Figure (tube, rainbow, N blue to C red):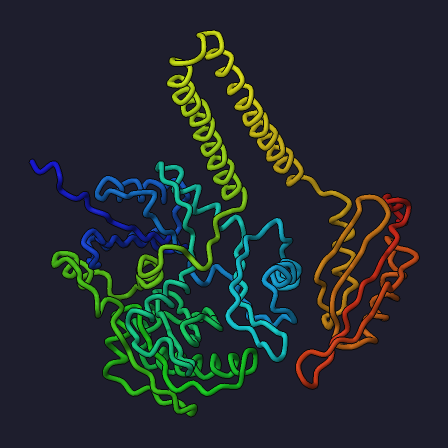
Length: 493
């Protein structure tokens, strides 16, 4: 037995959709990547308990390291938006994105998990382009609950579109060039369309055409795919930028790629469309190739596979905030514990050597007692942090009056205004700061607030015109509102 034999390092990608469980494992022990496991299981119509049993049967066949487990959220379950915001400061952009969530989905911010990525900033114009991804919290929690039933946990819940982006970086040599190109991942029921520019995802859309359509009616599916590509290009140029796209790469289900390799897909936009196998440049264990070719040609593993490739950290992670907070508390508690042990042991060791030569036994014990008092202060601080977190969790389940004020502002604000901050003192004053492209919109906003049942004595503290770029102007404003009845609104019904 070789005691110095290096332990195999295997990363796992898992996707649970409404129809399939997909699992892929890659051996990265030697630096190279070899696919050692490809599993798919049909779960159509199954309950959470039945799906958990399917995954349990998988874990009996293969070993999964929770520290190396990536969960992929299917693109069709996630809402993405490309936004243009009038700021280049990451903190301001984060605040603006938080305010946009309620406008982009029919759900409240408490019901969703969101993440964003800044894809470009225009220094001369003062604007930034941001991709916002939003998923309902219940969808993510369902995945985590299923894993919990089989004893699995993960802190990496990524977006399948990011997996497709990383796949493109591995398989397309010109991925970082300044010309945009399209990546299309065809799965069983649907496809993920995305535009890549300079190595970043700038536009994404889920389309309801998949491998099953090609199985049922090849000619009809080809025609629909061609129309969807044209529509997708028009949507991109209208929503993001009017920039020509010359190439589209179609991957995913091998069934579709094989059909397209022998077909010419004409389009009036002059785009070159090519098919590329999802595992074309990857080493796969021989027995896995045969098994996959026999029963896996109508689904795509791109979302799972791509998340395992390249960078370890995800650009977009849908891990619920309460889990992130719990991890941070545990890490801080561990750090404090280690610091406490060191604060005890190091002084004891040093003092022991010193006191052995100079001081009496009593002085030595007094020194230890002083050190223990310092540690007590540290543990008290940890207890205070834990109580604060409990309070946060308690308050997160309530619906305070401040949410009513925020909802009233949302109903009143014009789409032409961008709020940078909302400050409520908890009693009788609400302060709004933001920007507008038109001065009149600011005064209209003030008038609308004055007419609200929540506010009175609405005043514009300032409304200053500021130049952005060479020709454009925006208005920075601050509005102060007095909350009626000290924060207690009467029911007029």
